[in-house]
Length: 287
Image 1 (cartoon, helix red, strand yellow):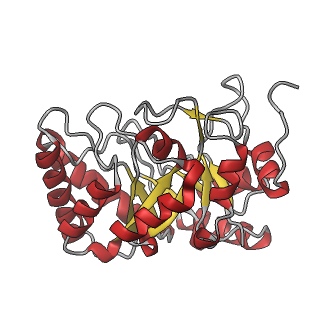
Image 2 (image 1 turned 45 degrees about the horizontal axis):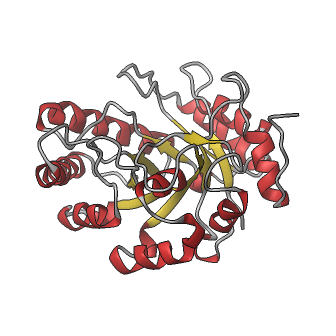
């Protein structure tokens, strides 16, 4: 079955209900959201009555809650010691919020070493995740996102992700989120996506893939820039992205769109989801 959705909003008043209503408007059957602004620590209390209302809406509209994803805020950076205590504490709090909401998966950017070097940065991430899992005994999994390798980003290849996973004691609570734009920009050829999956399986294991971010790219292959483009409008291309979305080995994995707004004001997700379901590209931007 195709589980397809996009990033949606969450606010302090309507909370998950707002997220579900937005996903319904895109004809999605899953979605991803932040539990608060990704750039700061402002967080509202989770209202259980709103969560229950949202669950009812999901059941009524064919949205699969077990495929819903939370994304951790960008300000978490486990790779540098200067930010470690804050990042561990805030990530622990985010996991607790996921558990209260009943969400199973939290996507995390592994972090940027900011000059301390790759080895020390990876060791810091491992140490930070071990602290987080010591603090939090819930069931929410952290999904390490594949990164483009911009600046000092880590998680830029499968070997770095493997090293993190192997170093974390409770690594049954770790999975991976593939991002097609990041893979392309990081040097993995989406034109040969089955080869990419073969390599991932050999190094980490396909069972660790729990989410796919489906984004086209504004950048050429292996340029390490990380700029998302709308589906079919970038250098990866519509057909290649369809091959990712409908790949049999990822059949039960939620696919989440994080593509840019049209003219910075209109969400493209309804049109993109329709194209994906129909398997037919339509130029909905330049009409």
